[in-house]
Image 1 (cartoon, rainbow, N blue to C red):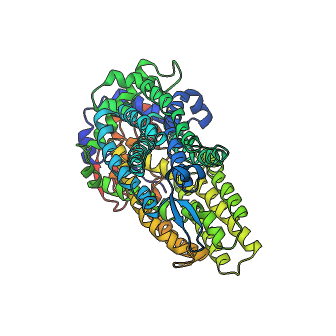
Image 2 (cartoon, rainbow, N blue to C red):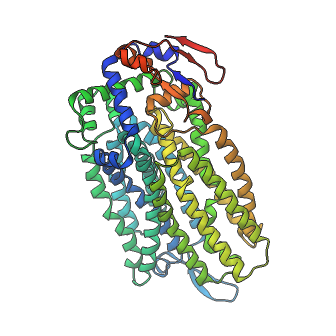
Image 3 (cartoon, rainbow, N blue to C red):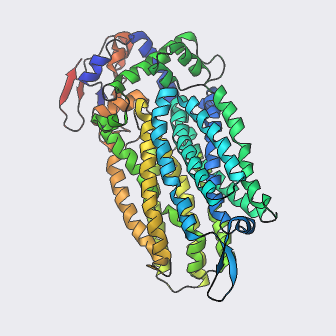
Length: 565
């Protein structure tokens, strides 16, 4: 049976100064956000979703850029300008990008993004989401000039480092901003859209690169870079006009600005003045609960008290993305050619696999409010394990047309399943999981861990599939199936359900050490609104007469009483 939990003794002490009438009204606003259907929520809060989605378009640029440069290593016009002569064993001379420069260009993005992730956690708390986002957009306008008018490898290396710095800013802020701005029922949609934006960028990069082959001269490679100028100026203007996070404004004592920001998230007239006062009271209440273990909102606070548990979950869900086996689909062309498929079929399958990014994310957005975050994560991992095992089995069979097409179909299926489940849902979980005071820093830390594991994997996977190295071929899927099985077991016991919860409720659940498997079924009772008649929602009599219930708050794991009220 579900168990009721409430404020701990320490939380009750810090929440005593709250206005019970305003807080009770704020709690009712949260209930309304939770209970309305998704379509109704869109009609009332379409502005919040619009702001979040438009600013997330920055990740289209990230996906586009990530596809562009590696593809130029084989682009005739790019090679004509920057390639070096190479004579092979048969005496044939051709232009190539030297291996040391390819390696340098791929490695420079790691320190660039890590530096930006360290920066964005500090900057977002110091200057706000909008100002930090605008700074990133101004920088990237100048970086695109560097790409378009490249003169040397050194200039390209500097441009790659700077653009990686910008991507780190946008990867963090878009998720954090959407989680702060959108109501409970729309948080999943807004945060999951980030994954779709990235996939759309990759697909556009593939299309533009293919189209640029029909052009000749320096604009054959300059134009694909120049097309990125389509995005920054409109996004910069949007960020200037967008409302700031009301949670950040409250922390800075800017209450009137917070009211204006909340009003701008909903349709005109949705909130009256009393609603706005109540909403602010609830945000202040949430902030007061979080301040117990995150007073300074520093990186060190992420490893204190209940935030330590959240940080573990944050790191592991991001790490799971890297080791889920999904990255095998990114090497599909090489993978299939090495398995014996001809180049034409290999590239055709590669294009189909890339399109699964958009299809999968579109399906995930359709079911995000029908299936729990936890079910999507664990179910997605289990599905990926099954597909990986099938790939490994096919890798044990002699190469044939049927086997190769089967491998291509399964690689496309991995991409589809990943983007329905694990890919976008991690953005939702990582945005909802941290305390609002630590959200930007927590997401940044998770992304850093993701990038570091990616650097390790980028060294291992090519060796796994290369014929002149370990030569595991498709059988390397067995390795990822094993790793994914361990992640799935961990997720079952450690990842809680974060959907349909206000941030104050999540704070109370973590403070009471509720096991991850019981998050969804546990009822949360907030004693701070008791004086206004808000009591245990299961106690109908108390709800009617306005008298406080006598409730024993317990630790769910030990069943020991914490405090009586």
